[in-house]
Amino acid sequence: MNKHVFPIATSAGRRIPVKMQALCADITTLQVDAIVNAANTSLLGGGGVDGAIHRAAGPELVEACRKFNGCATGEARITSGFRLPAKFVIHTPGPVWHGGRNGEPELLRSCYLSSLRLAAGNGCRRIAFSCISTGVYGYPKAEAARLAVDTVRNWRESELPEEVMFCCFSFEMLTLYREVMAEYT
Ligand code: AR6
Image (cartoon, rainbow, N blue to C red; front, side, top):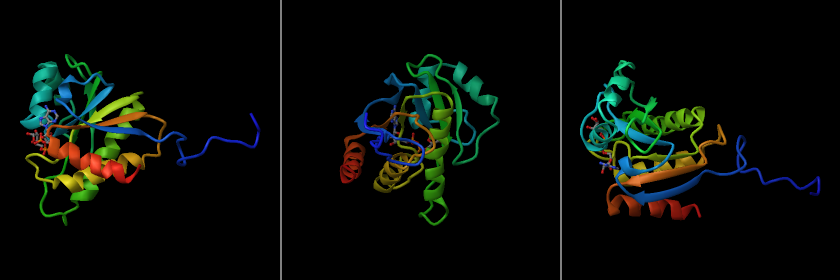
């Protein structure tokens, strides 16, 4: 190879951008290295995607989560996936939407970054995010999708993960993701 030809640097810390895709699925069925749960600060389970993940993973999951003594909004914790096809579950409590001037965007961004960090630190190549905060926590869906795509697209800290899936649970949400991602391609 010509010694003056180098791979194009797409960012400071990684040469290959994260491959992103949005899909419509039940996140508990995905065979990936880690799925990211939209948890609450107790980490002890709840409704929505959190309830589905705990049901599918089995009772060992809540026992593993209990050891953390909770988790602050915007932070993340990692456990085994137990009976799930995914190897790990990353649990992150998203912000409750209170109008957007109470740090909600920063906290939601922090959920994505904290989760990416844990995924990278645990050798995860393929991960799937749930649409954190867009259910009972009321974060506007379009803004949440934009922030999610933007944060993953700008992920620079590690070569991992290689691939990120945005796991939607409605075609409305899937369309929002696809619209945002189309702007970047
Ligand atoms: N697979 C993928 N996505 C799902 C699934 C599923 N099986 N089920 C729901 N969703 P939510 P939040 C989507 O309410 O807003 C829990 O009780 C759903 O359509 O689960 O962050 C926790 O314990 C939505 O787009 O999470 C907390 O108390 C997204 O998952 C609280 O809800 C997130 O909706 C967290 O609220």
